[in-house]
Image 1 (cartoon, rainbow, N blue to C red):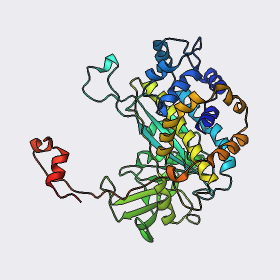
Image 2: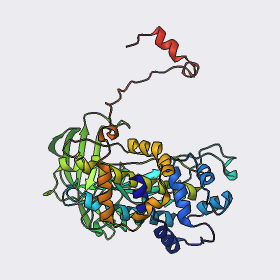
Image 3: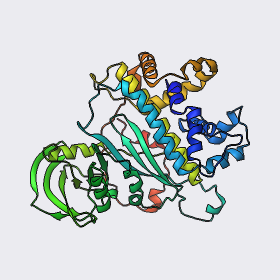
Image 4: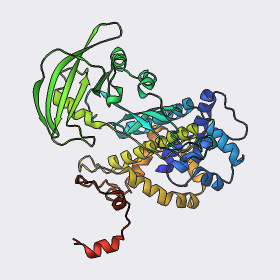
Length: 427
């Protein structure tokens, strides 16, 4: 299933055609862009520990390792974004016949969750970075997630790890359409962002920042009831758009029973959803659909963003496999949630052996299959999967224990686990 879905998402002719459209100053001589994507995808799904290892295992690599690195380091952010958008569209066409009867999370709206992702600090392999003591940030991106299909549908890469996420939002919002509901955290709580969504006919739910946009209160706060996480209040507020005209919004205030990880006990949300469609309690529940993502970084900014983009495509492939198993075994009736980690672990464990055992020509009949045909094939194969071995096992909340002050010598002291267990009370 993974091989067929990857074949659909990373079809070489499509990728090379996309490269010609978005390549900028790059060019193709011996190394096709589809080859670099294929090598990076092997690393992204964990089948090879590094790009170097993947290149060494590729018998038909037509260029040197240095030429491969130069190709990847020159991949433009615009090309990475086009790869993510295009692959999501291609996989979405496969998901459509599978999920045709699945009800959307928010009836009447196409849900979009936007989140900023700062790539973790990388090792200082680049020579100009070796003199710096601080962390080297290879880049960041804005990621747009569709929870109804479980696909990442857009990604805006940025080479500057310190760039303001709010300034990047304008390019993302060009994709906003009427009938969409966008959810974002307080980093995107600005007057300009709200007004652009309003102009494009989109709805939004955004956690209010403490300083911006400082809306004007139009009425006292009113109690609206309780949800499972706390008590909900609501009031009408207003901000001015870029022309100075008032934009009326709703402020939903959730008083939490248990504080967040940051210690917050009150969460304020701003939304333009109509009150006759969504109560304040519904708004508070919908905001809990937030999503975030992390990935291991490479050193060069463009290489790191390229690796993250391919990892996002690999995530989308896993989402298609999960949906196939979910639909084939009718898990919606059993309320069983599947784990992407378990799927990835299965692929890591068995993929290399499958590739060795199956001759390459066996995949040729699937080259020209339509999206509907591929969906049918995936559902047939998914019937042989064991959902119990792929389900998510969630543990209870970790009890919080406040740590008291100790001296640095005590904090750094090493202990032998076996001795502590032997001398203590083992339950």
